[in-house]
Amino acid sequence: DAKLPEGMEAFDNPRRKATRFPDNPEDIDAYVNNIPLFSKARPSKDKQGDAWKMVEAIEANQDPKVKATELKNNGNECFKAGPKRWKDAITFYTQAIDEECGDARLDSVCLSNRALIHMKQKNYGKCIDDCKLAIEKNPRNPKAYLRAGQASWELGKRKEAMRWYEWTLKRAGDDFLKKNYVVNLIKKSERILEEDRKKAEEKRRRKVLKEKAEDILANAIKLRDVQITGETLNGEYKPKLDDKGCIHWPVLFMYPEFLQTDFIQDFHELRTFKDQLSLMFPPKGSSPPWDKKGAYRLSELEVFVEVKSKTAHSVRKVGIEDALAGGLTTKGNIVAGVPTFMVLSKASQYFANNFLKTHKVLS
Image (cartoon, rainbow, N blue to C red; front, side):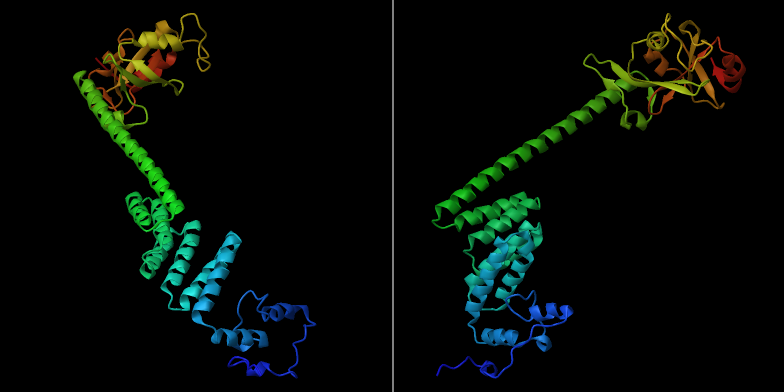
């Protein structure tokens, strides 16, 4: 008579009672988990039923290579089933490797397959680690080199990735499709590297040009005897030099009487204050909404700039017919950031009763 494998004699008992289906719904999960075909996880030894004991007895008598192959195949099926089963696939590949079946090529395949899942899960470091282990097992496994290259590329290690691709090509053997795929991948990667190189070169060139332009602008300002601070050239709004060598300044007009401002983004240095203010206060136009009394007419406007002096709130008058360049070089004026000028009306009571009393007008 045929004998059962060693360790399975206990199951050769026709009088052994079958396990009954539980009456209590709460016990159904434990019952199903003791059926290997439907189990989600292997129960601990003390909770295993006859079916699981039989499985373990069969596994104990199974050839490690056969078992490792079955586990690898199970992993492949889980991988094909999609992302929801990838965790199970990793478990199967790991169990296959842990069998230590002695077949280095089989172990290498399991490692490179597990590496593929790591890569798809964007665990690029783990992918590369598994690829290196796969190569140690079988140096002629082209997929291990390829996946290490792809993971390195995703990590931004472009040169390292190219080396992996070159090694893949050397180990692709006579397989035309594999060779063609790797050749195309290398060509695509080289194009991207060339594009990256050109972008980096263009970025470097623009940086150099920007630095040169800033130096030229700083020298142009220095030649005009305009006193500035670091903020002037490094702030959000900066002066610009045009093709004719003229400077265009951002300028802020303040109206202290009403706590109002006007910001001019591009004020040509040769343009007069009168020309610029006539745009905001046209001779035949209506007054701004905040000037209820209509005192701020172009003919009544006075321009002042705050200057550095021992006396607090010291200002100097800037001629309204003067160009911006003249206003910027007013004695004691230091441009900190955006050049700022105060605009007041001689026709307003605020000018005589408040401004002139709270500010020291220097000659």
